[in-house]
Image 1 (spheres, rainbow, N blue to C red):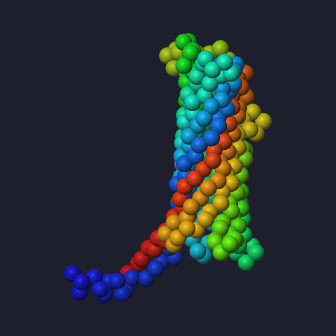
Image 2: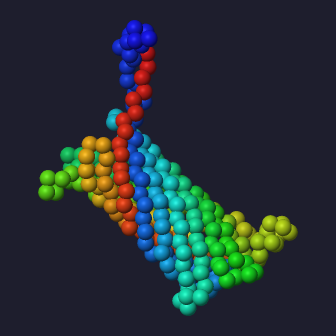
Image 3: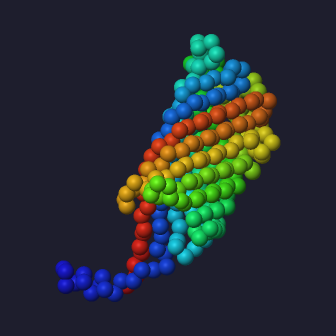
Length: 261
């Protein structure tokens, strides 16, 4: 077997499809503020937990890169009287393409592009009997920008990163004012339940600030802040979910070589 494999390994050459994958896995904790007038006119606040996975794929000889993010959130909140509770959970899948510029002797990297943010979730009010839950389903095209700066401090390699995602166009599901889910799904009474969204009626945006500390050759420690601000005013209903998280996790980089005979 060794005699058979050795000449094949000698003839194999790296292809132009060699890619670098940088993956970050982070977990975060912080406050959440919720308003959904379909369930209650009250604002609810409490603590939430988030998980964030970021994978960036790029090529050494290309300015283009692809970034995929998975974000999951869970929160438990109460109203001002502490008598009612709302539980909130959602999942966001974000896929984006970016073009990069390298400045300051490649210490500064600027990326501009756009991403698709698809979100699914639910809010459950523990005291409501008629309409206890609100489903959330949306998709949005968002312009996005990222700035990354590498520097040294006290002999340690550090990297600062900032990302901002802004709203552009999208679509979301929403019941109309006074409309029950029984009417929508059992009786089939459609009442503008699929709503186009713009920055005027759904000013949703995200931002991330992080600092990477290169601990060793195999991995990097990342700490930072994630803010995800979901807002909408459609069908005479108002809603928002403000998530603020302090994040911590690890970053790993892997070079993927593809060979051809």
